[in-house]
Image (cartoon, rainbow over all chains, first blue to last red; front, side, top):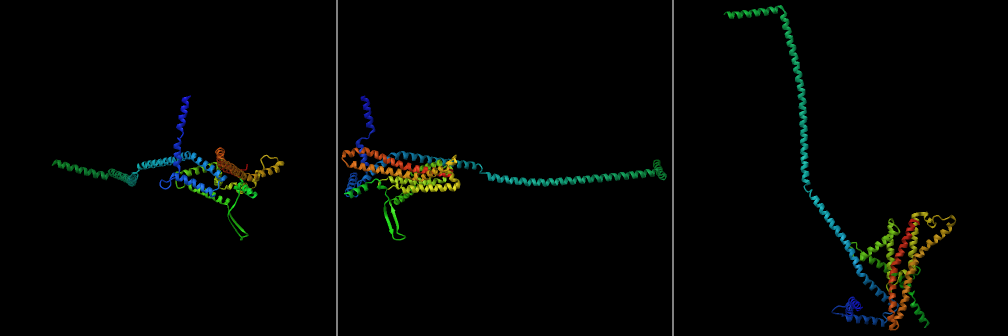
Length: 219
Length: 260
């Protein structure tokens, strides 16, 4: 029981602000500047002014004063109570938005960097394309030349074939002409041989030759 | 003596605070005795306008991406009004948001300004609240007529009404429709007036009790605490009434758009 009481006393003493500290807090909260107006001066001046205003009927204390007092106390209490949670909430919200914006900025930077690196891989693309283009140009040129050459070859082959066929035809014509000539000659010879006169002439010439041979042998 | 008493009674009347008094007046014998007067009602109307513009100017955050502590409050109140409009009138009718937003802030700032001691509450003038509510109802009726043309009058005949009952029901519906104009304005006026009157009466009693002996003055701190709670309640009523006014306006607009 005594321990509980002691604990309670201790807890209450630890929770509560000591009166002296509380008083000094109130005094510290008074507006003052170190040189001109002291805290005591503020209190005295304030009280004096209020008393003077009331006594001179510059300020009339009436029911509105009660409302003013109640309103001032309530508003200061509400302001004091709300200030910290509102500040925390507002700062949390601002931080959240700031975080979102910073995150967006960071991700955007990252995306830009990624884009730069991906584009960087294609930095030689212009020269490569130019090379490829000139190569393809050359290829096309060569292809056209090949085509021309092929056409020439085809034409030459065609010409050769035509000429060959002409040659063959000429040869055949010549052969048949020669054959006909030979045949005509043979026929003529054969015909001539069949003729008596010719036979006689041949015979005579043969005899003459033989005679000549004989003569020659005899000699 | 009697005159003094009358004067005191008049001065102490809790309803005296709602009187519209002339502050600066111009009474010229031209244009049929032209009378231009700046009343406390006009002055506080201008003050409310000035406060609303100042609030929006301070809390304007267009130039910055990250909101300030002021703009967050304004942004969240805008979001609340926006969600109210979306829920009540529908997402497709968000074009009524500026109107509802202006209405909300006008009534709210007017109510809150009135809570400041020595000030005047413009919403405790029935001419202000009824003008607002009548303007809204006339506007809503024009809106309904322009959308639905002649079919708008079907609003006054509930579906499935027997033909014999139609004249009676039309009369009842017409009355209830017209009563909206009164109820909307009177609700705001009555709430604000009642709260301010109560505070005035209680403060008169409290002043008398504080002016008595020291012991009574000390004991009066207990009812004074309750009085402070009532001031807090008045602050809450300022918010609630502006919210209620706007939500009812939204529902009237929805009725005019959707008919039933």
